Amino acid sequence: MLRMTLIEIVLFSLPFSLFFLYRTFILRHRMAEGDAFDPTPYHKLFILGGVLAFAGFLYLALHHKTYRDGEYIPAHLENGKVVRGRFVETPRGDNSPDTSNDHEPPNPSGSKDN
Image (cartoon, rainbow, N blue to C red; front, side):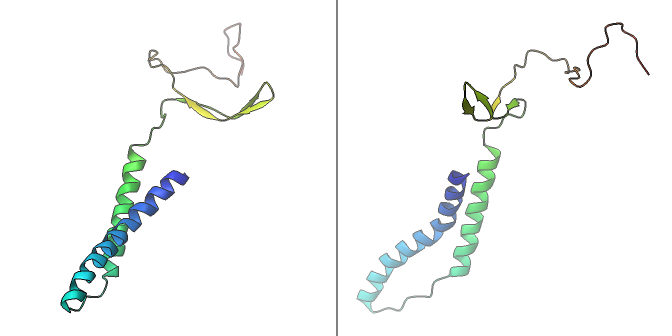
């Protein structure tokens, strides 16, 4: 999560840093020639930064590795140590739906009890 937040901050600040580098370079040449410099277009920089951050967010969200067909194993204890929760890919060989019901034990007689 921290990595994604830092990427968003970098993408948002990229137009500002590029503009100020450009402005510093141009300002040196214009001061030598005696020309005035235009004011900073902050509204355009904020819009461009927002568009870049949103595009980066969409890209990261759509290309993030997820296990939609996997099984989640919650955090648990193994040999006295905490094992973090994780996703495990389930094999795709079985195409039949899972019809097992963990809440009701199977009825060995085969008849329904009402």
